Length: 388
Ligand SMILES: *Cc1c(COP(=O)(O)O)cnc(C)c1O
Image (cartoon, rainbow, N blue to C red; front, top):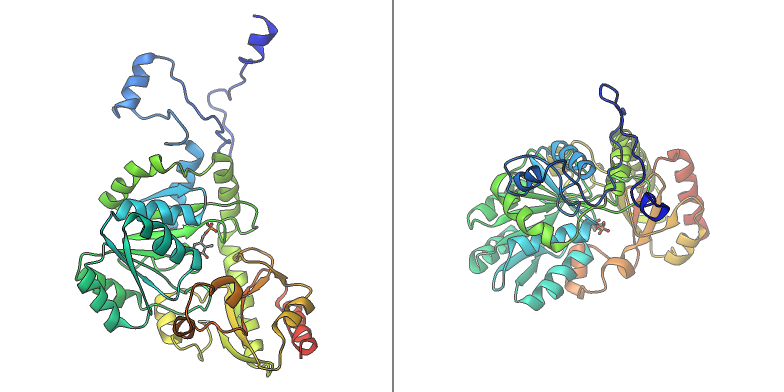
């Protein structure tokens, strides 16, 4: 063979039989071949197992799918390039022109954009209501016979807790599919509820180090089969190299999550005692309006805190005075970050909706990392004093 051919078909060094790597190697190959053409045909027709093309299936992605599904207590998962693409593929699969989606004022701003603006352009209708107004939710579900109800708990960014059992009961009356964006609670929470579909941004707790993006759709049975058929045509497949990074990060998921929760609880207690903070929203504090509900629904109270700076505290000066907390929009990573909620998450909400969501110009959302909580408390205390 000439060099131009050899460079395309280099000699391979497969691992011998009876000898194997402890971790799954990265299968970055886009395509898979077969020793015999008949096997290819059997694979395509589904009468033998195998891989053909990475947009449709890949061993690394399959390993991550199985792990995430089991953590969430469900059978299967579909993995997307990021959380928003998972939401988009899921809603495209569940709703069609003329259908209605019930969603909530207390939700992630890009989710509102996706449903109201993007899906709205294709004739999918939607209504935004307060997640606590069960009477209005029932009225809307009945009147619109909603195809999907999409919600979060705790909500982003103001950490309100949805009564999951109640919402599911209301949706069941109308055969509405229940989709829970469980990003804030994590994979180990809420699996006990009859949620049809869980959505997660893997860019948060799964990576945990803020260095790769992904999204997951997790559920059971025929609803997942239906979604899977169309999912491959949305082209939002997770890359195998990213799947391996996620698998590596997930080994420390519980260690990180526990440490972050522990730190968040201590920091929330400190902030509550601080006169320059007028209110602290953390589901683990008895002062949280849905603390008892959070205790019943969740195994822990999460790593996020929402605070309301006292009137005399200048928001920008406070943020600029911090040295350990950086201003950044994401969450769930090992480093602590914070973001002012109003400019980041309330641009599309009117005054009444802002009141319902609890976002004011003085609201700041904190994501607690795994630094020593004492250092984080010192950082917050000194920045608050310097911002008055
Ligand atoms: C971040 C986030 C998403 C979107 O995830 P990306 O990976 O950033 O696309 C969706 N829902 C919630 C609640 C989030 O916090």
